[in-house]
Length: 327
Image 1 (cartoon, rainbow, N blue to C red):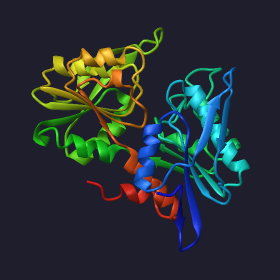
Image 2 (cartoon, rainbow, N blue to C red):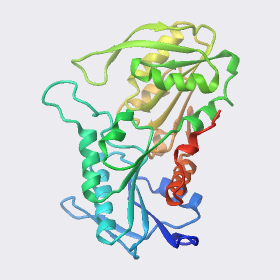
Image 3 (tube, one colour):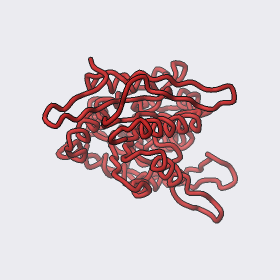
C-alpha cells in the first residue's frame, strides 16, 4: 500500500491523516482505500498543549483529516484543529475534516438566554483552521450542516444498521420505536426502510436534573412484537433504558436498541447490562473500550461508508449517490 492515492487521469493526489483519538477506525478506513496513513508525530507537552507534525510532504494533495471527537472531547477537537492548520501551512490543496462523531452537536441552538451555540462555534473553528469541507456521520440535527461555510457531507449509518437488524428479527413482528418526540423523523425513516409500524414514547425531561427523563405514555402497538428503539447516540443510556422498560411493561416480546454513536458515558454500561434489552447495535464511529463491550453489544464497522465517501469526494463524484436507491 502507498501513503497516498494518485488519480492518473488528472494527476491528483489524495492523502489520509489521522489523530490519536480512534486509530483503529483510521486504520480500517485506510485499508478500505488501499493506502497507508501519512506518518504523523503527535504528542502532548507537559502543560497539555498538543503538537502535530506530518513526516512527509502533503503539498498539493487532497487531504482527508480524520478524528472522532471522543472523550476527552476537548483534547481531540483541539488536535483535529491543529492537524487541519498543519495541513494548510504545509500547502495541501484541499482539506476535508472528517469527524465521524461531531463534538458539541447537541448544542445546536439556544434553549434559554445567555447560552452558546457551541456546534456553530466548532464549525467556525474548523473553517479558521483551514478546513475546506466537513464530513460527519449522523449529525444530531441536520441544521448543523448550515453552520459551516462550505460543503458538508452528512453520512448516514441507516443502511448499515437496518441491513443488520433485518437479519435479526421477523419483520412481520417488527415495530420501530422512537424514544422521544425528537427522534420521530429518524424512526420514520427506519419504518419506511423496513416496512414496519411506528411507535412513539412521549417523555418529559426533568429541568432540574441533567440526563434525567420521565416516561409518560406510549403511542402505538407493541404487545407481542419485536421492538427496535432507534436513536442517533447512546450517552448515559437513561432515555434508552426507560424506553425499554416502558415497552416491556406494555407487553413487548423483545427489545433491541440501534444507534449510530456509542458514547456510553458514566452509568451507561451498567444500565444497559441490567436492562431487559436483548441486543444493542451500534457503529464504531467512537472507540469502545473492552470493558464496555458487554455480551449484548454488537459493533458494526463504519469504515466502508467513510472510505466510499472519501472516494466520491476525491473523484468529484456524488456522496449523496451512496444513499440513493437503498432499500
